[in-house]
Length: 302
Image (tube, rainbow, N blue to C red):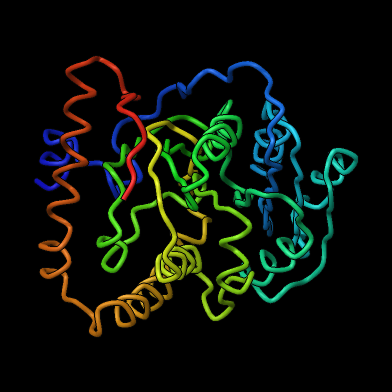
């Protein structure tokens, strides 16, 4: 019954497979762009041999410069290291050694960056064509915005599209309850990164991205949602999201306790997200009426 209601309503947030696999459709890349703001991307990776080449190529093929790309391999044993080495001359930095987890790898990677705009893409996800150009142009035109994020396409292990998350306008409030913001679409200014101490909290192995967004909010950051598909999240059986559900729940509840002062029940969570979900559904329904899955309604700020 829940699946039928999701299909009828168009509710996609939090859902990894919404329909049978189909060829992925993505925005056009656009013309090459020399940005006044440099971009630095970090990829933490561990044993993602089937996917890492697509991840790297999705970054290197972005039609924007200057672009700095750093890959931090945690000592893979499945062929990932050898695959990354094929791209070594195109990377700003690459190292492969045992680390203390994803947050540690990211912190060490970001410490090597010099860009004005920062972001990370995991070793099984990938950026869509023209994504970084779109991001760079927006930041250059909107100096008042500190953090941006876009919409997500969900793909399976073979890179076929199985779902889409079309987000409503940004809500600072919803960040205290749930994190619907797709990590692979998030980018922020270096000045904001420095305001939060230039680091991810390494006590988080799963929800470090949500924790970072909350810390950004606590620093007074201005967020903006861009109504464009920017990144693809890969759903597969070996991913950390699937394999560490108990750990993920514990870390998410740590954040809720900090933000709300208590850990809400499932019923309380459902009630809290209703306004946000209704705005998400409104965007889904408008896109269906327009026959366009990528609604161009303009950026939405907090």
